[in-house]
Amino acid sequence: MDCIFCKIVNGSIPSQKVYEDSEFLAFLDIHPVNKGHLLVIPKEHHETIVDVPPELLSRLMLVVQQAAEAVRQVTHADGFNIVQNNYRAAGQEVPHIHFHIIPRFSDDGLRHWPSKSVSDEEMSSIRQKLKDALHI
Ligand code: 5GP
Ligand code: ZN
Image 1 (spheres, rainbow, N blue to C red):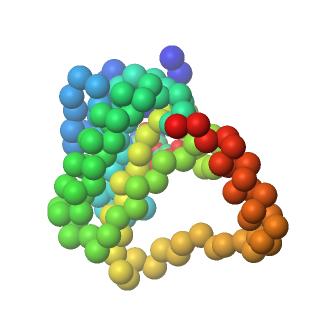
Image 2: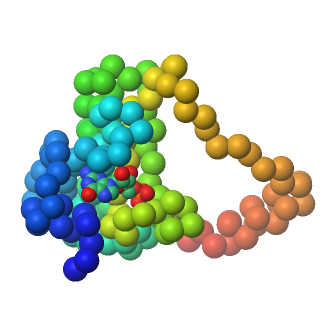
């Protein structure tokens, strides 16, 4: 398997591990947005959030929640972003699902996404399509 995160899981590539259990791993991002930027992954290889078995995703989120609080406390962050990119168009560079936990500071100078203007008709149309597509 030519996946960099699978290689981190099996130890053939080193990483700065923060947490490990039988199913999950948390390690420092090699190119941190801010110091303490953590990645949380399942050891099992799944590409995107929609590929992960729901029960595994539920347990993964509990690790993300605990790890986020550890990042916040240790870095004394004013806040944090949890980011999870899916597919290349959305900025996913590593095709093995991962959650970024990024500590944020009031003065860190990072800017948030700009918004687009969408007409009322387009809003209604997309709302209806989304409602029809969502079967929970
Ligand atoms: P993505 O863009 O796929 O959401 O994020 C991938 C992240 O993985 C990037 O922030 C990148 O810095 C990090 N990354 C890529 N290769 C390695 C590596 O070999 N080790 C570690 N620790 N992080 C990596
Ligand atoms: Zn993988």
